[in-house]
Image (cartoon, rainbow, N blue to C red; front, side, top):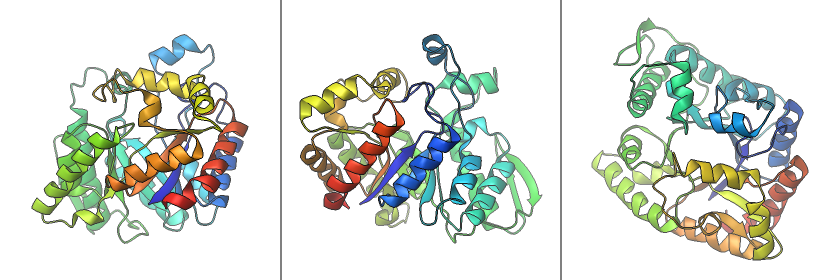
Length: 335
């Protein structure tokens, strides 16, 4: 099982306090991840500040654009891979420019790019960029992936969709990787059909492992029906992690974190269907032994990649310490 770490490209005011994510901090986290054997780092994608964040913090958060950020980080790392968890395609209307950025980044990084796409956690962001559009964001993401695949595979690419159109585009060079991995992010069961048809992986978030296992079985059946080998599809959920010497210590520290506040806010959006089970039980929170046990249960349920682990911490030294503890005391038992 692969293990990767979350990179706070757009997490100030959401999962972390303000300030938190300076360019120097992002580089420090990426190099720390590479040093301790993480497969990759995964950053998120925001364009404007959410209303509840504006109400809580007097200073706006710094949201760094992930693809440009990765071009910088790739120049200062050697083996670490870079993923978007997720790139919000509905906020990026020019799909050709997006494809060009991705292909360029793949070459500049030496083929170390993976792309997760999704609708975004907050409809208000989309509405701020495209007022009164009436667009269906899920359909936009699905169509956007189809458009990307055409641009990445055809010499002279044309596409005539509801949301994206282009004609006779020679996008060159193509990505460096023969098959650049594309994941769908989101907890909606509707994503299963999208993944089974056209994606290399699925990124749910904060999902109970029993529920996840049932959906994995459905996804594999859909992939088989679509004529694909289900074992080639990565099951890559995102979880929050905090490790303590005791369960009580881990739970208490998590509850004091900005991360906990953020997860509670997501109960109104992307995690609204995840039920009433408490956040500590669902996520990788506890002693090292308890976190190992939870990770192995996820692996037994079909998880192939603990993607972009969100380490609950209220300052950068605590985040780096949590990454190191996980790498030394958990990772050897689950990879």
